[in-house]
Image: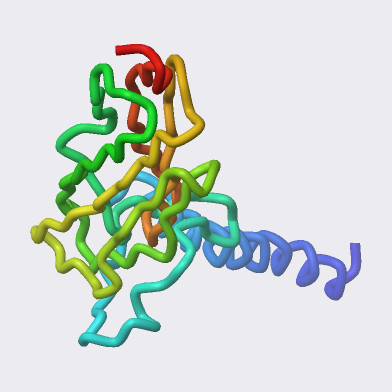
Length: 173
């Protein structure tokens, strides 16, 4: 072999070693993040835009640490038996057990007979709130189960609460 070929053969292992080091360092960081050791908290500084974010990262991983968490005291309220035409009211209480303020974007039911009212202001971490629901039983008889879907900056973004019970026809006493 000539001298140029010998120098080329010696330089291959060094460049290969350098490439391996460059590739290995980022994978160590990713490994730590996957184990939850390098998860970064979000500083909100009171800015709403900094807390409205998707917990699903570009790489497909899910960050469930830096989201609001809505925990209801009860998810189903059984109103028992009522007469058709009565209005059933109930308040669902919840706590934000997450690390960022909770923002409820919407609360809706499957029909206009069930109307939820929710707080429009942010619920601080550790604080509680209420969703008031009113169910008008007019023209609704028999077994009833009314879902209310709550959309917020949580993961998953939708939660459900339910009103259920039995509505007797108006002529029945």
